[in-house]
Image (cartoon, rainbow, N blue to C red):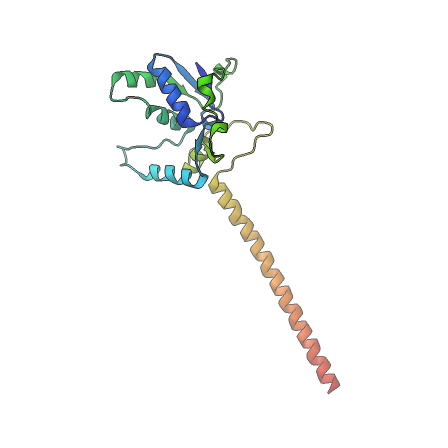
Length: 201
């Protein structure tokens, strides 16, 4: 079974995949980075930032920063990993970033009744964050997919902050120059008014 994770809710997708993997089915997930986590952006990003800081070096727990591993960890959490059947089921699940060449000719699984509730459009709230955005925020780097027509480019929050800082730096000198010019004008007007007063006297 091949599943396109684009715009699917990661938790519901993971539960669906875990169920089928336990029944012995091999599952391939493409576009892992396009799956979404529901919630406010700031809260979701802060939650996973805390997870990165948790644990002990070399022992963990570790928070993946690559979308394919990130999604696979969510699926892992749905499986009974203390039992052999859970560990074997996880081996049957493969997650990929974008669409690998070997699967480009393959058609993803059609949306069935059981898969309809996985779409992000079924969320009671429109607040959601893509796995790509979360992983970029955590410092993950990978070859991003080409932007599709009509698709909005997602910027890394760090890049947004850098752009904001650059903009403020550019605006600051301009505002300082304007203030200086205004000050000079006021001084000139003051001098002229004083000269006029002295001439009259």
